Length: 391
Ligand code: ADE
Image 1: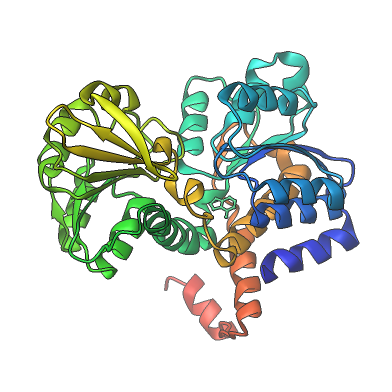
Image 2: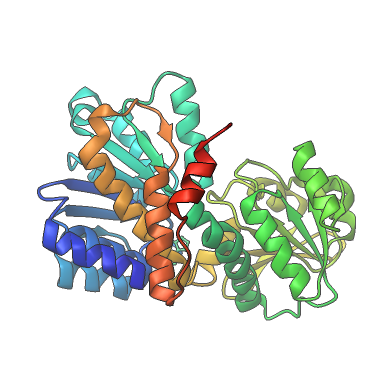
């Protein structure tokens, strides 16, 4: 992760986070470990819990404690109660910066009361789902500190959602099922940045891709990209593999499960496990059994089967390893620089969800170009004058 490494080296020299306590809820992976190390070398104290019980790598959690002195509350497969208790520990550790993947710490410090809240300078958020949740808090007039939506950085978007989620979602499905994607009808529900990447990679693997949308512009874009666009109920009747990527809830319901064909595979790529209606899948089935690790097969009364992957949790992290390090490098460099920006400027920022400051975005892209050994041009003085003139 060369870009993050260069940020880390500077942080170690300049100590921009000296004495800052960061309360984080992230996927506990080797890539996250590199971020935590950079923050700690920059002078921060980090209390970290896991954003998802199935993505935690226990060895990584242990190594973080041993090598960096971070406090880590995470265990692979932990229960919902333990997850909630860990969020509570992080939010009551008096964080000055919240660092989220899904907005759970930001929400918890808002519920914890004025004492906890007044210590928070600002927060960073990594997912589209979390940014939506924070914007809902903002429009309710409840958001008490500025949050930078790191996923909205242009540099991160180039790599992260489109290519990272696209590849790792299919990786998770293939690792869990060992299916051949070529020739399958893959239904992608949601054509946002993640859905676009998933559709692109599924098409590249030889699948016939159907897209479902609620937004006319996105539906149109999908149609112009050459995908078949259908309402989800019509798609349910013809799909082999269903992938939700909406950030919304109950996207696949009992109506869909009733018409799906035998052997349909259901996977979720959204942050929370609410996109596939788990109660509804149990009620259309007469029994269920585990047929492979992370594959729960539901038998309908007529003997036909539906295969749910990773309990409906985000499949790229639950059944694979999430985005590769090359993707998380830019993303976590953005996360580290956004944290530094908040420490310096939070008091001048409104309590809103902010995009990534454009100068940081360009800086990250420049660092990545440097790491790739790619050189680009600079404008001449004449060109700068031409761009700024109107006469
Ligand atoms: N989010 C997506 N992929 C990830 C990874 N590999 N590590 C941490 N968070 C992630």
